[in-house]
Length: 383
Image 1: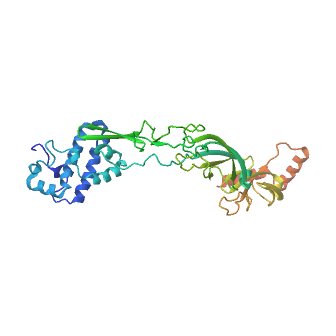
Image 2: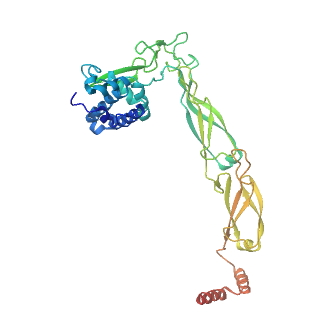
Image 3: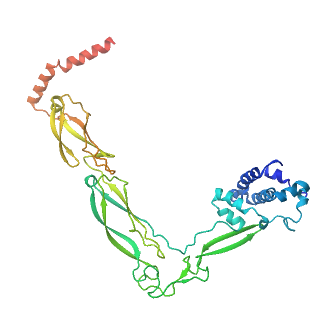
């Protein structure tokens, strides 16, 4: 007893500390010294962890605390048996379960104190796996919506045995090794610590049941591989990343569990004419400089046909026009986006002699480009 540190000192609390303060301090120190949090110095951490747990066992119990306050360590003779504090003496497992549940999800508490949270039995109905199918469509398909037929390989419930895996007229029996739990527990004692591992039962492979007479169609699996033709309706306005859910078209469940779902993931191909920004579309058109200078009325290609658009006189390169409602439909049914048309003014690479003459006359009528360049130089010098 002489070598034992004062319990209040171990937990770092005053003698006047209330139960909440004691628990709060233990919570902090238990996390700090837990062996799984100190892999580099596990043995020393285990000793400190045991020390703070022993102190908490006494100070968290009003009767033991009163005895300790009056007589010190000697007043606790026999409280933990002849070998001193053991984990079997620890009576505050509910408190510690909450503490370690917050830190580690309960798994470390299970390994140290040999109890823990109840696990779901693996022997009940199991939901089938969800599946994913990626489908690619064009922008025009996305604009109007499309129905496509796809072939999906998945597992479907065996009709011969109705998913039980047993030969018709027979049923699976409960595994005697795990008594239907599908799990077996292995307990190891290492010093003061008790480690519990839970694994799948080897006799029934975790099913909890054994099929003596297997179905001749599915071989006892309860499901068979099948490729199904499924019709998929892709709504107007779908974009890359749009997900559609087809319930029950995934893999079959086990032991009467429901089938999983099939998720269709849409990918929209890049379009040679349009760029997409949500429900809006962007396209480009080429104008010659006469159209840009004098104005014109042209036909523009939209996602669903042709539309007329006026080009005002003096239109500059890069000007962006908007055609309302000529974009993509909204997936939420809120109408259509807009079509934005960007203007490119094209300069001819080759001119005939007559075209050059006319352009020179046009230039001279505006003062001539040489005169304009000279005026610009003069203005720079004045500045």
